[in-house]
Length: 312
Ligand code: UDP
Image 1 (cartoon, rainbow, N blue to C red):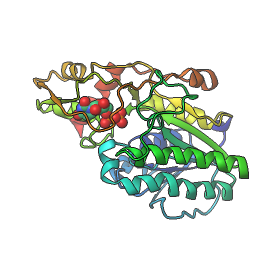
Image 2: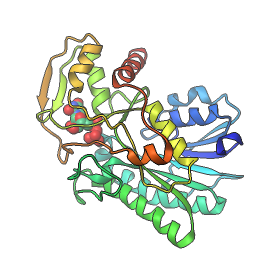
Image 3: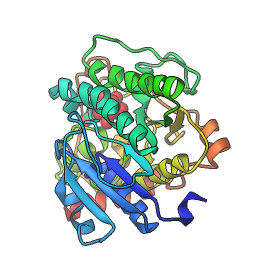
Protein backbone atom coordinates (compact mmCIF):
# COMPACT_ATOMS: atom_id res chain seq x y z
CA UNK A 1 0.00 0.00 0.00
CA UNK A 2 1.24 3.47 -0.94
CA UNK A 3 0.31 4.95 2.43
CA UNK A 4 2.66 2.60 4.32
CA UNK A 5 5.82 4.17 2.92
CA UNK A 6 6.91 7.79 3.02
CA UNK A 7 5.91 9.48 -0.20
CA UNK A 8 7.30 12.75 -1.54
CA UNK A 9 4.37 14.81 -2.65
CA UNK A 10 3.85 18.12 -4.42
CA UNK A 11 0.51 19.88 -3.95
CA UNK A 12 -0.18 22.87 -6.19
CA UNK A 13 -2.80 25.20 -4.80
CA UNK A 14 -1.83 23.81 -1.40
CA UNK A 15 -2.64 27.05 0.42
CA UNK A 16 -6.17 27.10 -0.94
CA UNK A 17 -9.38 25.84 0.60
CA UNK A 18 -9.20 22.20 -0.56
CA UNK A 19 -5.40 22.14 -1.00
CA UNK A 20 -4.66 23.07 2.60
CA UNK A 21 -6.93 20.29 3.90
CA UNK A 22 -5.20 17.89 1.51
CA UNK A 23 -1.71 18.94 2.73
CA UNK A 24 -2.87 18.39 6.31
CA UNK A 25 -4.21 14.90 5.57
CA UNK A 26 -1.00 13.90 3.72
CA UNK A 27 1.20 15.17 6.56
CA UNK A 28 -0.92 13.17 9.01
CA UNK A 29 0.11 10.11 7.00
CA UNK A 30 3.75 11.14 7.64
CA UNK A 31 4.46 11.97 4.00
CA UNK A 32 6.75 14.78 2.83
CA UNK A 33 4.71 17.59 1.36
CA UNK A 34 5.83 20.49 -0.81
CA UNK A 35 3.08 23.05 -1.16
CA UNK A 36 3.22 25.41 -4.15
CA UNK A 37 0.82 28.32 -4.31
CA UNK A 38 0.85 31.83 -5.81
CA UNK A 39 -1.47 32.98 -2.98
CA UNK A 40 -3.86 34.38 -5.59
CA UNK A 41 -6.98 32.84 -4.10
CA UNK A 42 -5.02 30.80 -1.55
CA UNK A 43 -4.16 32.26 1.83
CA UNK A 44 -0.95 31.89 3.87
CA UNK A 45 -3.14 31.66 6.99
CA UNK A 46 -4.49 28.31 5.74
CA UNK A 47 -1.05 26.70 6.08
CA UNK A 48 0.39 28.77 8.93
CA UNK A 49 -0.03 25.88 11.36
CA UNK A 50 1.82 23.48 9.01
CA UNK A 51 4.98 25.57 8.63
CA UNK A 52 6.56 24.12 11.82
CA UNK A 53 6.19 20.58 10.49
CA UNK A 54 9.63 19.41 9.30
CA UNK A 55 7.97 17.38 6.52
CA UNK A 56 6.30 20.48 5.06
CA UNK A 57 7.77 23.05 2.70
CA UNK A 58 5.95 26.03 1.23
CA UNK A 59 7.08 27.59 -2.05
CA UNK A 60 5.36 30.74 -3.29
CA UNK A 61 5.26 30.23 -7.03
CA UNK A 62 2.83 30.61 -9.92
CA UNK A 63 2.67 27.34 -11.86
CA UNK A 64 2.10 29.30 -15.06
CA UNK A 65 5.89 29.69 -14.85
CA UNK A 66 7.93 26.51 -15.14
CA UNK A 67 8.75 24.79 -11.91
CA UNK A 68 11.99 23.18 -10.82
CA UNK A 69 12.10 21.02 -7.73
CA UNK A 70 15.24 19.36 -6.41
CA UNK A 71 15.03 15.79 -5.22
CA UNK A 72 12.48 13.06 -5.51
CA UNK A 73 8.80 13.63 -6.22
CA UNK A 74 6.50 10.60 -6.28
CA UNK A 75 3.10 12.22 -6.52
CA UNK A 76 1.78 15.55 -7.76
CA UNK A 77 -1.69 16.80 -6.88
CA UNK A 78 -2.55 19.70 -9.20
CA UNK A 79 -5.22 21.82 -7.51
CA UNK A 80 -3.96 25.28 -8.39
CA UNK A 81 -6.70 27.28 -10.06
CA UNK A 82 -9.22 29.86 -9.07
CA UNK A 83 -12.48 27.99 -8.64
CA UNK A 84 -15.23 30.37 -7.65
CA UNK A 85 -17.27 31.78 -10.55
CA UNK A 86 -16.93 35.41 -9.40
CA UNK A 87 -13.21 34.93 -8.97
CA UNK A 88 -12.42 33.30 -12.28
CA UNK A 89 -14.56 35.81 -14.12
CA UNK A 90 -12.45 38.56 -12.56
CA UNK A 91 -9.22 36.74 -13.52
CA UNK A 92 -10.18 34.82 -16.67
CA UNK A 93 -6.71 34.78 -18.26
CA UNK A 94 -4.92 33.66 -15.10
CA UNK A 95 -7.56 30.95 -14.60
CA UNK A 96 -7.34 29.66 -18.15
CA UNK A 97 -3.55 29.60 -18.08
CA UNK A 98 -3.20 27.88 -14.71
CA UNK A 99 -5.20 24.95 -16.08
CA UNK A 100 -3.56 24.99 -19.52
CA UNK A 101 0.09 26.16 -19.24
CA UNK A 102 0.20 25.30 -15.53
CA UNK A 103 -0.94 21.76 -16.22
CA UNK A 104 1.61 21.46 -19.03
CA UNK A 105 4.40 22.56 -16.68
CA UNK A 106 3.31 19.94 -14.18
CA UNK A 107 3.15 17.18 -16.79
CA UNK A 108 6.75 17.99 -17.72
CA UNK A 109 7.73 17.77 -14.06
CA UNK A 110 5.80 14.50 -13.76
CA UNK A 111 7.77 12.96 -16.62
CA UNK A 112 11.09 14.30 -15.32
CA UNK A 113 10.48 12.83 -11.86
CA UNK A 114 8.70 9.69 -13.06
CA UNK A 115 5.88 10.73 -10.75
CA UNK A 116 2.10 10.37 -10.89
CA UNK A 117 0.03 13.47 -11.65
CA UNK A 118 -3.50 13.85 -10.35
CA UNK A 119 -5.41 16.68 -12.05
CA UNK A 120 -8.34 18.20 -10.23
CA UNK A 121 -10.93 18.75 -12.88
CA UNK A 122 -14.46 19.82 -12.20
CA UNK A 123 -18.16 19.23 -12.54
CA UNK A 124 -18.03 22.37 -14.70
CA UNK A 125 -16.66 20.20 -17.52
CA UNK A 126 -20.35 19.31 -17.99
CA UNK A 127 -21.36 22.97 -18.34
CA UNK A 128 -25.15 23.22 -18.02
CA UNK A 129 -25.62 19.44 -18.15
CA UNK A 130 -28.36 17.87 -20.25
CA UNK A 131 -27.91 14.52 -18.48
CA UNK A 132 -28.96 14.15 -14.90
CA UNK A 133 -27.38 12.97 -12.65
CA UNK A 134 -24.09 13.26 -14.52
CA UNK A 135 -22.10 10.13 -15.27
CA UNK A 136 -18.38 10.08 -16.23
CA UNK A 137 -19.41 8.98 -19.72
CA UNK A 138 -21.38 12.20 -20.31
CA UNK A 139 -19.44 14.72 -22.43
CA UNK A 140 -21.16 17.86 -21.31
CA UNK A 141 -22.84 20.98 -22.60
CA UNK A 142 -20.35 23.82 -22.29
CA UNK A 143 -20.59 27.30 -23.79
CA UNK A 144 -17.05 27.61 -25.23
CA UNK A 145 -17.10 31.41 -25.34
CA UNK A 146 -19.25 32.11 -22.27
CA UNK A 147 -18.07 33.89 -19.14
CA UNK A 148 -17.39 30.54 -17.43
CA UNK A 149 -15.42 29.14 -20.36
CA UNK A 150 -12.04 30.34 -19.00
CA UNK A 151 -12.58 27.75 -16.28
CA UNK A 152 -14.69 25.06 -17.96
CA UNK A 153 -12.72 24.88 -21.18
CA UNK A 154 -9.30 25.10 -19.54
CA UNK A 155 -10.22 22.24 -17.21
CA UNK A 156 -11.40 20.28 -20.26
CA UNK A 157 -8.13 21.13 -22.01
CA UNK A 158 -6.20 20.02 -18.91
CA UNK A 159 -7.96 16.65 -19.07
CA UNK A 160 -7.25 16.38 -22.80
CA UNK A 161 -3.58 17.26 -22.30
CA UNK A 162 -3.17 14.62 -19.59
CA UNK A 163 -4.74 12.00 -21.85
CA UNK A 164 -2.50 13.07 -24.76
CA UNK A 165 0.64 12.74 -22.63
CA UNK A 166 -0.58 9.44 -21.27
CA UNK A 167 -1.10 8.06 -24.78
CA UNK A 168 2.03 9.45 -26.40
CA UNK A 169 4.55 9.54 -23.54
CA UNK A 170 3.05 7.04 -21.08
CA UNK A 171 2.79 9.78 -18.45
CA UNK A 172 1.21 8.45 -15.25
CA UNK A 173 -1.93 10.51 -14.84
CA UNK A 174 -5.21 10.61 -12.96
CA UNK A 175 -8.27 12.80 -13.40
CA UNK A 176 -10.91 13.59 -10.82
CA UNK A 177 -13.93 15.80 -11.37
CA UNK A 178 -14.78 17.66 -8.19
CA UNK A 179 -18.36 18.75 -7.52
CA UNK A 180 -19.40 21.54 -5.15
CA UNK A 181 -17.39 21.30 -1.96
CA UNK A 182 -17.67 23.28 1.26
CA UNK A 183 -16.10 23.56 4.67
CA UNK A 184 -13.78 25.62 6.85
CA UNK A 185 -11.30 27.91 5.02
CA UNK A 186 -13.61 28.87 2.19
CA UNK A 187 -13.11 32.58 1.70
CA UNK A 188 -16.07 34.44 3.10
CA UNK A 189 -16.18 36.80 0.12
CA UNK A 190 -15.42 34.36 -2.67
CA UNK A 191 -18.98 34.61 -3.89
CA UNK A 192 -19.91 30.97 -3.62
CA UNK A 193 -23.25 30.08 -2.24
CA UNK A 194 -22.31 28.50 1.12
CA UNK A 195 -19.91 31.26 2.32
CA UNK A 196 -22.38 33.85 1.05
CA UNK A 197 -25.37 32.38 2.88
CA UNK A 198 -23.45 31.73 6.11
CA UNK A 199 -21.93 35.22 6.21
CA UNK A 200 -25.26 36.83 5.39
CA UNK A 201 -27.14 34.74 7.96
CA UNK A 202 -24.60 35.34 10.74
CA UNK A 203 -24.87 39.09 10.15
CA UNK A 204 -28.69 39.02 9.81
CA UNK A 205 -28.26 40.48 6.32
CA UNK A 206 -30.53 39.46 3.40
CA UNK A 207 -29.80 35.97 2.05
CA UNK A 208 -29.37 36.36 -1.70
CA UNK A 209 -31.05 33.65 -3.71
CA UNK A 210 -30.20 33.93 -7.41
CA UNK A 211 -32.83 33.41 -10.10
CA UNK A 212 -35.93 31.63 -8.88
CA UNK A 213 -33.73 29.70 -6.43
CA UNK A 214 -34.83 26.42 -8.05
CA UNK A 215 -31.41 25.48 -9.44
CA UNK A 216 -29.85 22.54 -7.64
CA UNK A 217 -26.37 21.61 -6.44
CA UNK A 218 -25.01 18.83 -4.25
CA UNK A 219 -22.53 19.72 -1.54
CA UNK A 220 -19.66 17.57 -0.31
CA UNK A 221 -17.87 18.29 2.96
CA UNK A 222 -14.17 18.94 2.40
CA UNK A 223 -12.91 16.07 4.62
CA UNK A 224 -14.93 13.59 2.56
CA UNK A 225 -13.57 15.04 -0.64
CA UNK A 226 -9.95 14.90 0.55
CA UNK A 227 -10.38 11.23 1.54
CA UNK A 228 -11.62 10.56 -2.01
CA UNK A 229 -8.72 12.45 -3.62
CA UNK A 230 -6.15 10.42 -1.65
CA UNK A 231 -7.94 7.15 -2.45
CA UNK A 232 -7.82 8.06 -6.12
CA UNK A 233 -4.07 8.71 -5.99
CA UNK A 234 -3.50 5.42 -4.18
CA UNK A 235 -5.62 3.48 -6.67
CA UNK A 236 -4.76 2.11 -10.11
CA UNK A 237 -7.48 4.22 -11.74
CA UNK A 238 -6.83 6.85 -14.39
CA UNK A 239 -10.34 8.25 -14.31
CA UNK A 240 -12.05 10.55 -14.81
CA UNK A 241 -13.72 9.75 -11.53
CA UNK A 242 -16.33 12.09 -10.09
CA UNK A 243 -16.07 13.04 -6.45
CA UNK A 244 -19.03 14.74 -4.87
CA UNK A 245 -22.08 14.25 -2.78
CA UNK A 246 -24.96 12.66 -4.68
CA UNK A 247 -27.64 14.30 -2.51
CA UNK A 248 -29.27 16.98 -4.63
CA UNK A 249 -30.44 20.04 -2.78
CA UNK A 250 -32.59 23.10 -3.36
CA UNK A 251 -33.46 24.26 0.16
CA UNK A 252 -30.07 25.55 1.30
CA UNK A 253 -31.09 29.08 2.28
CA UNK A 254 -33.66 28.03 4.87
CA UNK A 255 -31.35 25.35 6.23
CA UNK A 256 -28.56 27.87 6.85
CA UNK A 257 -31.04 30.34 8.33
CA UNK A 258 -32.32 27.75 10.79
CA UNK A 259 -28.85 26.53 11.79
CA UNK A 260 -27.67 30.05 12.54
CA UNK A 261 -30.90 31.23 14.23
CA UNK A 262 -30.77 34.08 11.78
CA UNK A 263 -33.31 36.87 11.31
CA UNK A 264 -32.22 37.31 7.68
CA UNK A 265 -34.89 37.59 5.05
CA UNK A 266 -34.46 35.68 1.79
CA UNK A 267 -34.27 37.99 -1.24
CA UNK A 268 -34.18 37.10 -4.93
CA UNK A 269 -31.43 38.41 -7.21
CA UNK A 270 -30.73 38.02 -10.89
CA UNK A 271 -29.42 34.60 -11.96
CA UNK A 272 -25.78 34.86 -13.14
CA UNK A 273 -25.14 34.19 -16.84
CA UNK A 274 -24.63 30.51 -17.76
CA UNK A 275 -25.52 29.38 -14.23
CA UNK A 276 -26.15 25.62 -14.49
CA UNK A 277 -29.74 24.65 -13.68
CA UNK A 278 -29.04 21.29 -12.08
CA UNK A 279 -25.90 19.57 -10.92
CA UNK A 280 -25.58 16.26 -9.16
CA UNK A 281 -22.95 13.55 -9.52
CA UNK A 282 -23.64 9.91 -10.17
CA UNK A 283 -20.86 8.49 -7.97
CA UNK A 284 -21.27 4.81 -8.81
CA UNK A 285 -17.74 4.67 -10.30
CA UNK A 286 -16.11 6.20 -7.19
CA UNK A 287 -18.09 3.79 -5.02
CA UNK A 288 -17.04 0.79 -7.08
CA UNK A 289 -13.38 1.51 -7.86
CA UNK A 290 -12.39 3.55 -4.79
CA UNK A 291 -14.89 2.21 -2.23
CA UNK A 292 -15.57 5.88 -1.53
CA UNK A 293 -18.67 7.82 -0.70
CA UNK A 294 -19.28 10.93 1.40
CA UNK A 295 -20.02 10.34 5.07
CA UNK A 296 -20.65 13.79 6.53
CA UNK A 297 -24.32 14.86 6.56
CA UNK A 298 -24.95 18.36 5.21
CA UNK A 299 -26.36 19.62 8.49
CA UNK A 300 -23.31 18.42 10.41
CA UNK A 301 -20.91 19.86 7.82
CA UNK A 302 -22.74 23.18 7.78
CA UNK A 303 -22.52 23.36 11.58
CA UNK A 304 -18.75 22.83 11.45
CA UNK A 305 -18.40 25.39 8.66
CA UNK A 306 -20.56 27.95 10.45
CA UNK A 307 -18.51 27.50 13.59
CA UNK A 308 -15.33 28.21 11.63
CA UNK A 309 -16.83 31.32 10.06
CA UNK A 310 -17.82 32.55 13.53
CA UNK A 311 -14.29 32.01 14.85
CA UNK A 312 -12.60 33.59 11.84
N1 UDP B 1 -26.13 31.24 -5.55
C1 UDP B 1 -27.17 31.91 -4.91
N2 UDP B 1 -26.84 32.92 -4.05
C2 UDP B 1 -25.57 33.31 -3.81
C3 UDP B 1 -24.51 32.62 -4.46
C4 UDP B 1 -24.84 31.59 -5.33
O1 UDP B 1 -28.36 31.60 -5.08
O2 UDP B 1 -25.37 34.26 -3.00
C5 UDP B 1 -26.46 30.13 -6.44
C6 UDP B 1 -25.80 30.20 -7.81
O3 UDP B 1 -26.60 30.95 -8.71
C7 UDP B 1 -25.70 28.73 -8.19
C8 UDP B 1 -25.54 28.02 -6.85
O4 UDP B 1 -25.97 28.94 -5.86
O5 UDP B 1 -26.89 28.29 -8.82
C9 UDP B 1 -24.10 27.62 -6.57
O6 UDP B 1 -23.28 28.71 -6.86
P1 UDP B 1 -21.74 28.78 -6.52
O7 UDP B 1 -21.27 30.13 -6.90
O8 UDP B 1 -21.53 28.35 -5.12
O9 UDP B 1 -21.01 27.70 -7.42
P2 UDP B 1 -21.32 26.99 -8.83
O10 UDP B 1 -21.94 25.68 -8.48
O11 UDP B 1 -22.26 27.83 -9.66
O12 UDP B 1 -19.98 26.85 -9.45
